[in-house]
Image (cartoon, rainbow, N blue to C red; front, side, top):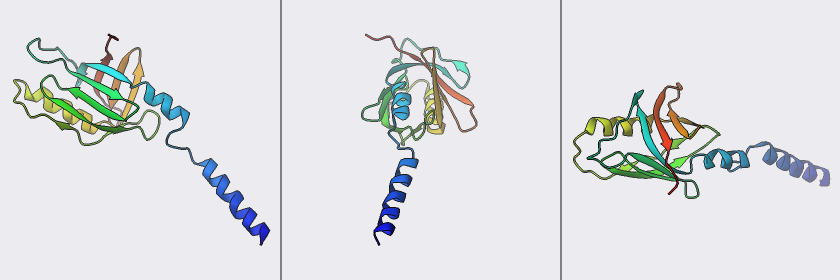
Length: 146
């Protein structure tokens, strides 16, 4: 009986150690790359030109609370995000303010891109968001620390 109990306990330890925990140091390091404010630089493969009469378009990641917020250049948005594996990301349904904007086409394209995002990379202070097919959807440039 003691042998069986020992085997069951040993198997439990083995299987619990073989699974990669969701909050492993590698995941935390990957998530930490997102931290902070990022300015919209490219949308649908085209450079984003900020309209000086509209608000600054950005996204900001709170990696402690796993929350995202930002501005589409008109409306504020926010929600949660998860990083299930290094380089993978998904956003909860984002909520936003509902102001009428002169350029709803850009705003709708941005929200669709964020909804379709499944992965990310960060290189040279550029955050690239892409879909499951690795098609680049959005690029953000790291905002200067103020």
